[in-house]
Image (cartoon, rainbow, N blue to C red):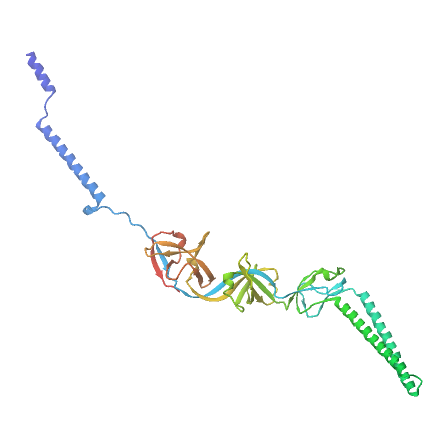
Length: 390
């Protein structure tokens, strides 16, 4: 009895699942499996897209840029240079006589003078007295000559009467001729002295503009002092433009040029009147001398820039917006056949309102980025939109 009751108790403690319980467990498993299948299908839908296609990478926004094919056209060949202004014909004026103390200076820098005009006067009291002495000696010589002539005339009258011999007539004739010669010598000496006095005046050798003055009243001067004044003959000026050897060979006398003094916006028109026959072996440069008319803004010794019109050449012409520069020099961006941006180094020529001429680096058939180059980098992919060249 006890044994049976113990067995029953143990069996009750470990009851086997009933049929309902087993059906409920199967339903839960089916629901979980269906849920897993649905979740898997949803994941597959979002991951691989509709129709089972793989997702594509997001589209890249390729920039559109405007390009231009410049071609080639006649462009003025402008040669730029710098140099110093100078008098075209500078005339140094100094003491030509014996010199002395300066009593007057009659001109100032910037004055116009005529040929032969007195610039300064040197004290001449001693020379004037010497001239007066020579003038008096002429009077003495003339008196002696007159006396000799009178004696000769009287002797000729006496020789006819036989009181004087022919030899006396010859001696008196010689005396008369010597007296006349002394008159001529005295006159020559007086002329020489007056010429010396005239040379005490410092005069302008030709008409022109006074550039500098290096003498003051009271100063003692002589030929060793050098130039006391400097004049620009006719007021004509020039620019000594320094040019590379290659540019110099392309120029000829008569080529027009435009000169702008530093610090001004004034433009002066001139032309080349002389080309240097010698090239500096150190700098490999020569000098083109550009003739200019007188103007107060053109001061000898000043610095100026020039643009020389050296004919015309066929070259690409680009808008200024297409040309960029950095420490390496000027460059443009060119779009290649693969629509990728390529840097192209260039050399520019004349820059004007019509554009920038390219003398080196382009042949005119390239697709050049017109603007927005600062936002691009070499190798960037772009969509080029062609704009017609002007």
